[in-house]
Image 1 (tube, helix red, strand yellow):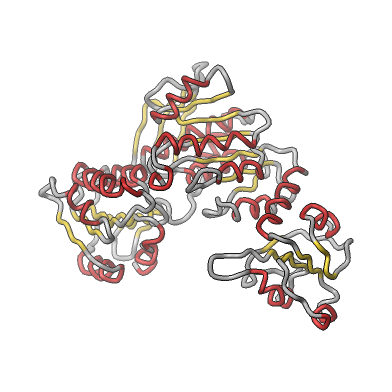
Image 2: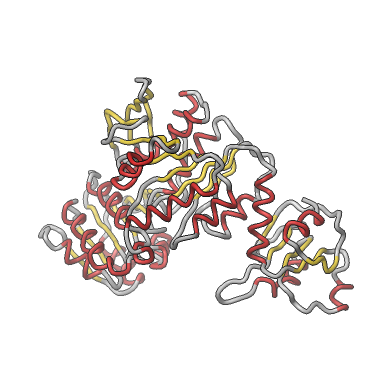
Length: 456
């Protein structure tokens, strides 16, 4: 994009610089800025990115978009070969540039939301789509109001875009979908994540359905085994285009003959017209069956061959810190699922752990955040899943650890250990772990359990 285009799109004030200069790559971080990037100074809770405009230019940026900074005449001379654009609101400027960039592309844009499974579904869907199209996808967990527009601004010669949309409150998905303008939406499930902010699962559904607002013609894929999505499907199937996948409820794409393994799973995917695909997934756990079914649904809608769909699923790679399974030097298997936690994802991870055949099964669990008045109840339910799953050792830390313990103590075989810090957990694990053990480490990201994984 030329500077002239950007100034017009964001209604900016060109302080210095040539309007004809072209820019390609955008950055919000002076520490990782590359030569000729355009830097956007975003205001955070504890700092104003606009105040780092000089560092950005000194680090090689070609241009900066900043809020008003009282730039002196001397500074204008020093940076005369650069571009400085001032705007009222840099965050809004980011949104507008991303919308403009998106408008230049007539490509499939697949947007994924849901209470759990967004990132792993994104990984499978992007792997499938990339078998036919050059595909850009959300990296890591950049699924918010800054990460999503920056992902769109990375578009170059791609032929498809797969983006993840996260939210904590009403209106957040609405903002994201109106930037990304999806051609196909996916809702993985409606669970209890952020129920403390939204008040009920019905409200979570309402917030997730905002994804349809940015679509010219709503076309959505849903997990038909989720109770609220199944009800919504039955109420709306004659009003908008809804495609379904599932294991239990009759759906367009269904899984049969499921074989769940520790390191991989297999199943037969059957479509409504009785077409069959044999699917191999390179990770264990029933929740990945659902992710794969979603990937098949997307592949079918985008016209991929069965061979390409199968290859996309069998070769996909998970984003790190999500069911990231590593064999440690001491013969211990580590399941690093430390990025985030909700009741539904805890349940899925514990079910996977309980089905493993290792010497001992150890669960290291921490708090699930943003559950509000449901916190005690849902942490206790996690404990009940521990008890159900015949876990040998449970190690807990956090404000709600006692509630997990309360639910878990029904199983007298489970040894329960409550600790106060991550360092204590690390020390305890180093003491007790032995060859043949498997250890699951899971909590909300703010608990920083990933540090335990790194040190192990």
